[in-house]
Length: 189
Image (cartoon, rainbow, N blue to C red; front, side, top):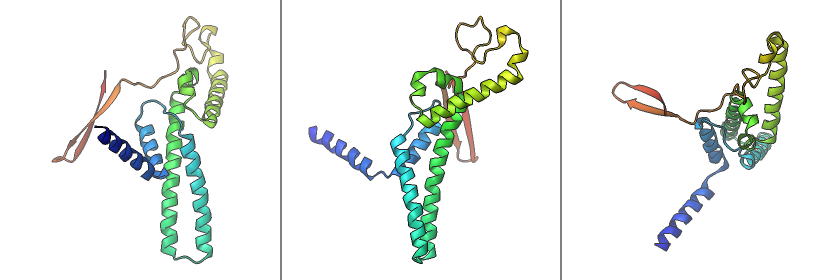
């Protein structure tokens, strides 16, 4: 039994080592897109990917200067573009979630700690900008009891205007091969 466990641990370790940073980024991107809430920021992975992108750009310039075959340079550029797309998309999904659940993320320490420093600054700037915009356009024209961005009225005991991600929403998809139709059903529990 001990040998089976050690073999399983060794297989997991070998799989982890063989996984490239691009594959890890792809997994983080998929997880972030599929999760209803914002996940922990993968800071070390993002930093490594940025360094690899810089190195790849330098290598591409060297390839072009040394008259390497254009097909090789083109394939190298395609791989670089794919990596840049994954990184941008990962960061874009995170920013969209921050914007969608802005007040809740800033109010909850658990979610705020999942953000990078830059994302925290972005969230605070968005809150400040949205607050000043709403103050100038809408809230100044409302009665005093309704001039809060976070509460529906002064009588509200807690902040009830910020939306939060629904963790009770499940997505079920059914594939009908004969009809070539994909149906997605939303079920709230």
